Image: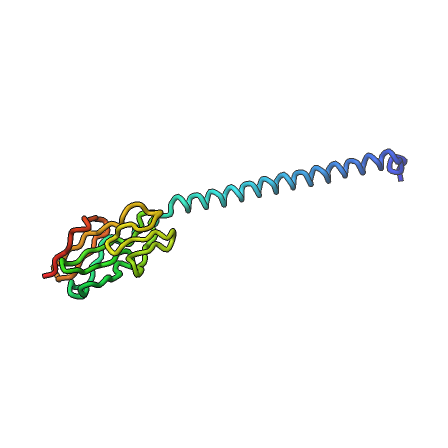
Length: 169
């Protein structure tokens, strides 16, 4: 053995160099790991944002071909169009009350006194007038027509006056 290898100063210097190398390697690893985690998080965020921005919610249908006019007996209320409207028949003909609550857009349900919103407890008469808020506007009426096959056609995108009826031949 040489004298320099047994020298305590030399041993201390070698251990210090190994510690510096070890510390530098650990620091490099943690920095690399941190950058990788940051990029992974950024990637997940970008993918989620792109999926959100490209989401194309389909618009539900607005026009429905229903039954023949005589399928709705006098004095009845019939839920149609997946619960989005009610067909009423009176002595003047058929009318269609839109089931969308005018407060926040929930679908109203029939009740003994007319209609009731399950979301915020708005209540409406059988002709759609508000009897209890928070809704302040009456339910709207939608357009009805007869197609070439003699079926009732409901168009939820077109509103009509509450007085308008589809006469039954």
